[in-house]
Length: 256
Ligand code: DC
Image 1 (tube, rainbow, N blue to C red):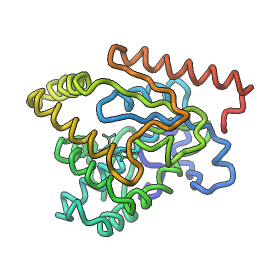
Image 2 (tube, rainbow, N blue to C red):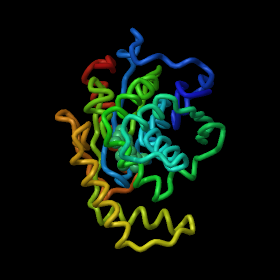
Image 3 (cartoon, rainbow, N blue to C red):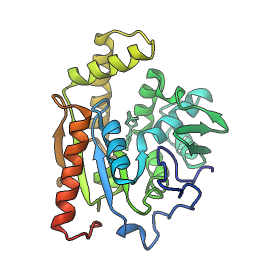
Image 4 (cartoon, protein in one colour):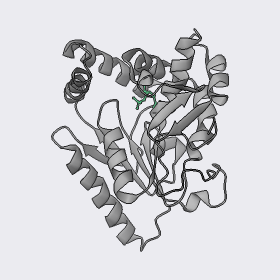
C-alpha cells in the first residue's frame, strides 16, 4: 500500500484491510461516523483513541504520525524544517505503508524511529506550514470508512472532520504529561530528565497553540476530558459513554 492508502494506525477492522479507502470527497463518506479525539502532546489521547476504536471496531487515524513521517523524511534528507513548499511537496508524495501496526516509509520500517524526541520536535515545526497541512488533508479524510473512524490529533474536530459525530478534547496538566512521557521513555531504556521533558512539552504546546494554521484548540462543540487523575481505562469508558449517549439521542443516526 503506498502513499494514498489508508495510512496508519488505521487498522481496518475485520478483514477489510485490503479494501480501497473512500476518498475524502466520496459521496458516502459524510455518513460514516467520526469520533474526533484532539489534545496536546502526551495527554493520553492516542491511547484513548486506540481503546475507543478497538471497543467499537472502528478504524483509527493517528494523524500525528503523518506529520512525524514528513519530519522524519525532512531530517533524513536535510530539508530545512522552515521550508514550507519543499515540505509540502514531500508530504504530497509521501510513500507510506501502514500495516499490522507497523509504519514503513519509502520501504523502510520507521515505526520506532518516528517516535524519537528529535522527530517530535521537528514534527511540531513541520506542522506549522499551511501548505503541509493542506497536502495531508485528503490523506486524512480517506480514513473515513465504514463502520466508523476514531481520529486522533490536534485539528480533527476543528478542520479535518468539522462534522464529526462526537468531538472530545483530551487534556492533562503539563506536569502529569511529562511524568507519563518520562515513564514511557524509561520503560524503553531511554534516559532523560523530567525537567527537559517538561520544557519540551511546554515548548511544543506553545508552538501547537500559537501557530496561525489550525492551532491546537478545542472545537466549540467538543467535550473536554481532563485525564490528569484518570486511568486510561476510565478515559476510554468515558468516551464510549459519551458516544453511546449521543447515539441514543440521535436514534442511531451517527453521522452528523
Ligand atoms: O500527536 P503527535 O505528538 O504524534 O503529533 C506530532 C506533531 O504533529 C505535534 O507537534 C503536533 C502535530 N500535529 C498537528 O499539527 N496536527 C495533527 N492533527 C496531529 C499532529
